[in-house]
Image 1 (cartoon, rainbow, N blue to C red):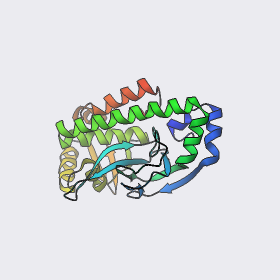
Image 2: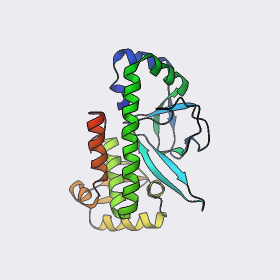
Image 3: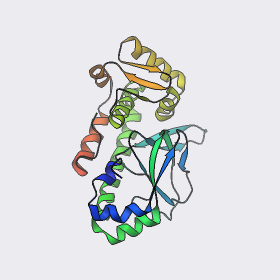
Image 4: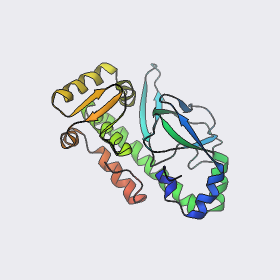
Length: 235
């Protein structure tokens, strides 16, 4: 449970409430955790460098990621009791380890612990802030700025300047075609900022990357730190 920050900050008695109901499961990139319209029966806690996204489909058949969850959070049944359909599809973007828990078990634990109820309610507020900021970011910032922001977020979650993330995954997260991503990465490669090799992103110049990015990553970071002090991975 220590590999997920949201769980690692719980008091020992609350950890003991949840531990018997958790199962470690490895998920590959592009696997679906819950599909839009399905009942939310499982809650997923990403561990380490694992990254998942909330993805919405448009009537035209396109898809766009509207929020991301890494080791700082959870997916599914965080506030509700899980007996409602999911509005968006939750899909794995960077494969890795998850802790899975039946949402009904989490709900029972929250009934037994006021601290658990408050903790997950606070996380829900932080997740909503991220969704708000993502909507504003998508409406006002360029593909280059948003791509730089995603690379910084990847670095924050992995703690490494070289991490697994393909151009296809970046395109899905940005809601654009891969050609746009290839063009931006090519330009940033020529400037010595980032590189992309064999399904990995390599940060070559961190200060320059920060300069290229919008400040949305830092705004969300600050809100997490205020509401849930210390759980959001620093970049």
